[in-house]
Image (tube, rainbow, N blue to C red; front, side, top):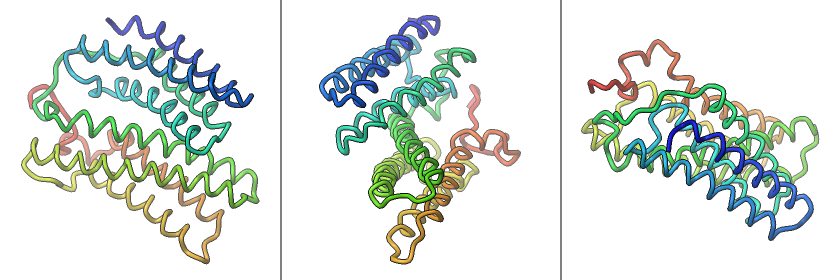
Length: 261
């Protein structure tokens, strides 16, 4: 399987997810579950085939991580739909997954089998995969926050939706950080080094923790809480890809890899 086949898997998966989103709005729960799961299976089959072809987890480049993000968005949407029956979530996850799929279609990246020693740890794959799932759920929470800000008078039930998404996302973010610490211990001999990537990861984690604690305060204000959530997601973007453009990360970060490592 090669990257050129991606478009066929992507189109099939998106069409199935779109049918699932439509079915959710029409209260056709069975169809929503069936088509969304089928779309996930189709998309994951491509990821698995790339994994076999590359002889390593497809997690090294930004294009490869976008594959996982495109997969986890509908998966997160399905889990949220299953738990809370939010009709809009499958539409959101499908649209956002389509955005990342289009980026990969119009800006494909070079994939090779080379994997430097630091990435050959068994903790590398679960660390990145769990993080991608957390990013997908927190992305859904951010879209909900933007919607509520436009509404100007968010309802308590709507704020509960946002809180539930943040709780799930933060839980997986925490697990991802723990996996990352175990990976760092094996790869570099220490659990934490405060390198630029890890520093921004800690900042992001604390930002979401601030949101959770502020929402528990009896004197909290909904609009300020929503702005905290949006700021937290901006910090998450810096942690995910923005760090690559910071001078402090060029050459000095243990997360800047080269084949010679």
